Every structure is written in C-alpha cells, then in structure tokens.
Image 1: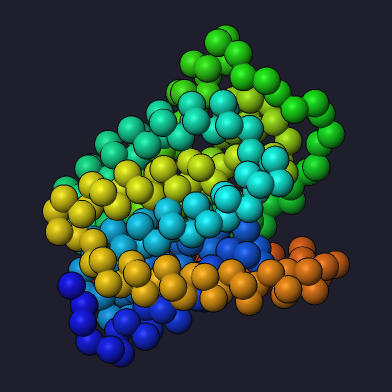
Image 2: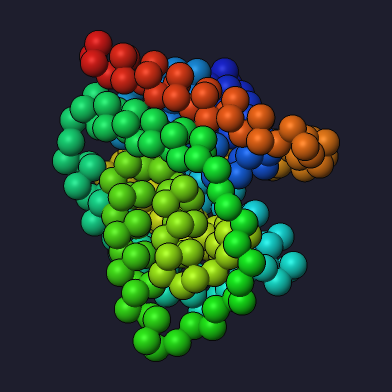
Length: 259
C-alpha cells in the first residue's frame, strides 16, 4: 500500500487526466491509465498498474453510468446479460494475463493500445433505427458477444469500451448513442472482475485506486464544460487524441522491449 505523498499526488493527477479525456472523447481514455501509473506515478510492477487501472476504470464507469441511467439512455436487460457473461469472461482473461511476465504483458498491452487508437480514427456512422427489446432469442447472441469481449478486456486490462460498443450494436441492433450509454455497465463489471482477480494476487494498491478515483471526480467536472465547447472541433480533437494513444503505444512497446 502506497503511503508516500508524491506518488499519491501524481496518481490523483493521473486519475484527473484520464477522466478528463474520457469526458471529452469517450472510449479510449482509460488505456492511458496504465502508462501513467507506470511512467508518471512510478509503479514498478506492470501487474499492479493493470490491477489499479482496472479498479479505477470500474469506479469511473459507475459514475458516468449513473448520469446516463437518470437520463433513461441505458437498456438494462441487454446491459445486464452482456455485463454478467462478460464479467465471467474478464475473470478468465485476467487469469491468463496473470500468468504472463510483466514486460511481455506490457508489449501485448501496447498492441491493444494501438488497436484502440486505430479504432478511434475510423468514422462512426450514425444510423437511425428503432431501439431493440431484449428477447429470449436474442439472449444467447448477447451472452456470447459479452463473454468474448469480456475475455479480451480482462486479458488486456482495459475498460474495453471500444469493443463493448460495437459488440452491443452487432448483437442487439441498438444505435451507437444507446450502445455507448449501455456499455458503461459492462465497463464497470469487466473492470471490477479484473481488479478483483488481481487483488487476490496482491496486485491492487487501494490507496492508489482511491487517489485516482478522487482525481477522476475532478477530471469529470472539468471536462463537462470543455466538452460543450469542443463542439464542431470534436472530430479533430478525437483524431489528435487517437494520435496521442498511438504515440504512447509505441513508447510502451519500446520500454517493454527494453526490459
């Protein structure tokens, strides 16, 4: 457990940065949590960085989920099926990741970061269609999609929003906006499952999680008015942010290869 003041301050600032970027650009921001913990806060063990990041992502997702839930944007039946099966997959995926050497895991994580950055560069078409209603016939499809996405999210130690949103859209037919709101329950569930698994191995530092959570509140509050001002420049900002993720992915890969 971290008690030194400087790492806790840096963790708080890192949590604020991640939450700010998430508020401004949506999915993808959480992948920067692990590099920030490793190279800014000074966490030595990559497994600890992933465990702390997963816990922080889960808490931030719950905060965002409450706002969307109050606005009635969350499709709960679909969200619950996807989240429950995905959480089981995240536990399996994170169990496999725990068996891998930390530096090798970072190299794999860098590949996942690059995939997130590239996915953010792809244009997202807005399709108008009726919102779905969960049926028993649809449930196996949603469950399988959730298990697959959850396994990947747990293995790579990321929130998985960039995978959850298209997974929900394909398996249920819901729109992009609805999938983004509904995905937050799965992001929280996957992060909680991954963090719990890492905690069993002693790879979650509760004080760092708390510091990042406090910073996350500040980052979210700061990001809300900025998101409104971003307006027409949002596509450009999204591309710049995607470029930042790709640059950081290269940096993480070089550091991992260098040992």
